[in-house]
Image (cartoon, rainbow, N blue to C red; front, top):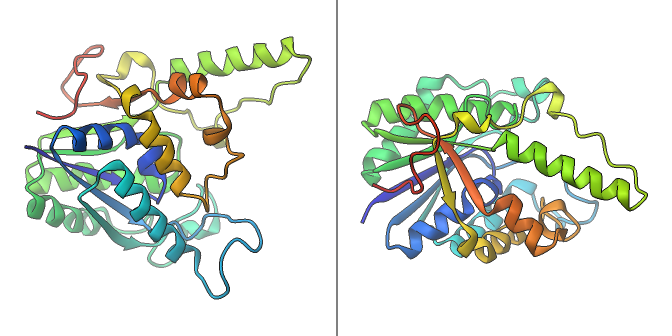
Length: 264
């Protein structure tokens, strides 16, 4: 049995990017540990969604535990940093924000967990955090340093297959035009590129057998992922096409896809 630690920035990131890998590892008998840097305080919810006196962070913690149960996690830990908000917002500089935290400070916290768990595998994000979010970029920096401190050699940087995403967007736009609809302007978030080119990706994990669990975990994050959201409203076939593979980069591997599992 191996131990895989999945390090994420906010509640709900875990099911979107690594939900299939988590459920797959759990079903195969491995230990699954979820570590979240922040409690997602900067998320948005509709008026009246929260109970009187309920803080969004409290709700998102409960949602994380519910989703983690669905995905088979054996442990959930929070590093207790503050959500930094989107890149360029004043909240980036809030005292205690993850973005402003010294990398070595956060890395030592994470390294302590890695040592305690005797982690064999660590996941994080690519160097742009997938799409340029400051907390995601910080996860990348902190994870690489923590792996160095704790001696974890198998580090997988979760990403999106940029080529696949663009092909999917183009196909969706074409379908909308054929139906007489004007497609949205698919622009990168704040000018940042999404994911990485397929040529840079070294691991592709087929998680189609675990999509029911992945989608159920998304549904558990009701404060951020509504039934009308892109994630839950799309047909099963489209969901499988978009989320049936989870993509990673492992330094020193490749070129091309050389691994189809993250576990040793």
